Image (cartoon, rainbow, N blue to C red; front, side, top):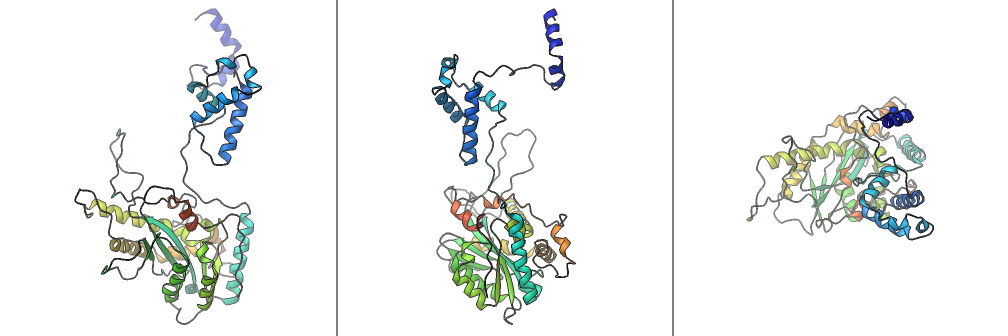
Length: 412
């Protein structure tokens, strides 16, 4: 070590003491040659990302070269030597705490006026409960959820050190159908409805008892499907034939709030409670506590079917997707596996069936419920069609909550 090196260390003693113990060199601490250009570039990136546009490293380098040709950056004495290299791009991103990130899955965003919307919905439901004094068996919730024929998990046990982890499927991870689940506040499960993407159902198919099977060209629920559900499922619930007054809670999916649907519900002595936009993750029992356990059961059944070798193969040796009759049986078994107590707690946690004397209000704040779902993690919203194209309009129909929409009750 030279004497000059020791003198330099003494001059930088404060800086050196603040450095991490694992760092052995002060690389990258040189002066920035184009601070104004990098500031403009950073503002450009922030503006694009706030609008949801993709920004790549290549786009940053091209944009930097374009900015260098504009005033006042091109007047810099070092402008001619600036080439926007990959190394410069890396250092620029480090200086501004930028990094390449994986696109996250679509998650429901809570509205800005969260408290007001929750209060509005709760006041509306409380008024109905005080006015009609519904029995728990007449307070229900319905929700549509998209499913796929293949349900592989994202993790598997494998040997340490393997760089490629293969998961075998039938190749139908993006072939969708819709499952409509509904339940009552006393723990009763109504018949699930399965809607397949096809024009007609196969003749002679023997579907399991206790499941309603439908065909739709696009595989989802529409206005006609909603009115059929009210007649075939909701009107067959216990107590419906006695014309007992009931309350049905569901989201703001467009097919739920048409005039025909409201008239049909009124004829069935049913009061509709529509959850405000963006709040199904807080106020819908199926979303909060039940959809995830249901899908976990369904995934477990699919995994056992795959590992048992029950899947049929084509002439070319490829695995065939499960038959729709088998899928319906899986849906029934998974739905029957949900405990009644879990359903009752789901309604209490969402503040829908709580006693009017306040003795059950603490259930709303119970975070230790094992049935509670991860509210914003839903791989359920990762929807694509058979060709792998992003099905944004399908997502809009399933998650039809509009953050800008206001809650409106329905008049008698």
